Image (tube, rainbow, N blue to C red; front, side, top):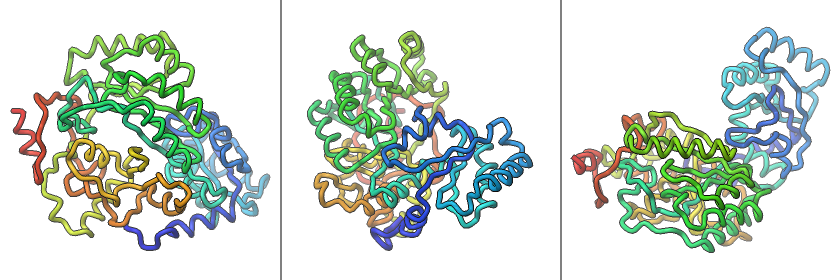
Length: 420
């Protein structure tokens, strides 16, 4: 989205939150906040010190519409929500979309003048606005940092563009610490803080970094995540650190494309289970979006066309990237800079290096999709993800036979033919 009223884009929502500071969660599963955050809602939100109330409608009844309507009617008689200055959130476990949808639907009908949200939309978007306007706090849903571009694989459609990185390298430990120091001067709470690569388990100082991060900024992080391709097993020192700080591993699955990885990956899963380390095991036939190289020359598109296309993509773009004290809205854009595909451009990032001069409202707007152009300069070379792009790999993890040279205007067809 292109800025039209910079610093005031969320003023209307912000004022509603300011006038309704109390949070009322109606539903169930209050012991888990959202996605990977296995913490009670009130514990996760304590950085805001809000007034919170939890009203239980057991999940087993949530699919019964008549029961939900009756419960809301009785709850209104008991609690008189209409007169309370509060935000109302329909909350069940984030995977229970039907239950969330039904409860949210009837809450919005019961309270048309109240700010009412389902739990997913509140924690994915509106919590950042609520935190800023009610407590002057900066909440960032997600951020990833690259510890190394060294990888044990060379996936053809790697989301980090590994085949285009000519000289893979690891980031010095002190540099990673410096990045976090800069970041948390401006960010009061990060929902997820993901360490990625390359293959981060190949990073020599991974355990040291995780321990330092958790000890220094653990209260400002909802959950530390670690992405891995499943080819390496943590050593004893790292295992203790992963367990101590409750790090969740995001375990990619490329065994369909590289069958020799299956016994290695199986051993990793067994090891994680034996050591009681939490992980998320992706499906056997994981897919990648084929978003680069582009299947047409988007640099010929007008600014308006690029911005419209970016809106379709960015609405679901999951990760911000932290690099050189700058937060990139699109992590893939930052990866493209590292791979030498595009040049760095100030319109693509928000600079946190001068914390005392940061406009928090502008920062939050940037984090939620606003920018000077309304798109990222990498959009000119990218097919996009989600609704902007239906191109996917048949299976993830197909290996490129070599390193590749990218050139201006390179097409997807040229890239695919290069390995044949």
